[in-house]
Length: 170
Image (cartoon, rainbow, N blue to C red; front, side):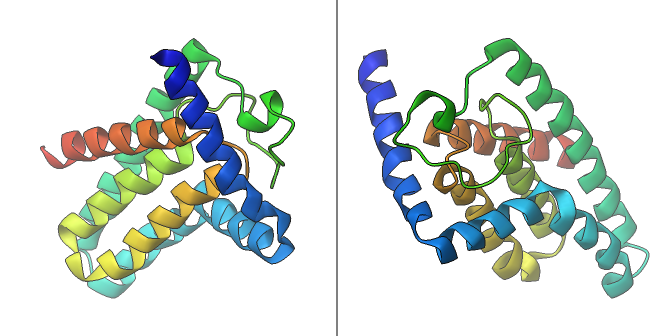
């Protein structure tokens, strides 16, 4: 069963990664990935209080807290699993941008995009139309660029949801 799951994981990764053969697609997802590396979220944390006033400082603070928790959790998991990135183990997968580190499980970009989005939308539902599609594109960029398997991204989503719920519960 595990072998079948692994076969499906790599097949889905290859299928998504084929989009990288088009330079415009590769560039688009590389930019999304770079913005998802923190740039978009840090700017949002700074802009929220400017747009919504002092009350948004709480939101930015919770985003910072969930970001720090996410960093600690995903680094701990990555160091324990040491799953190599898809482009490192499958020569059919083309690297679309430089990875931040050697290991793929879980996707930290996806974890953070999910957690940040949930926190922002919890307080400002009107922003869902911006942050939700962006978070989805960040998650897709990781697979398209050959940096993560779909299961890495799924794990990132699950962990991101859990962290956001925990941070929002207090």
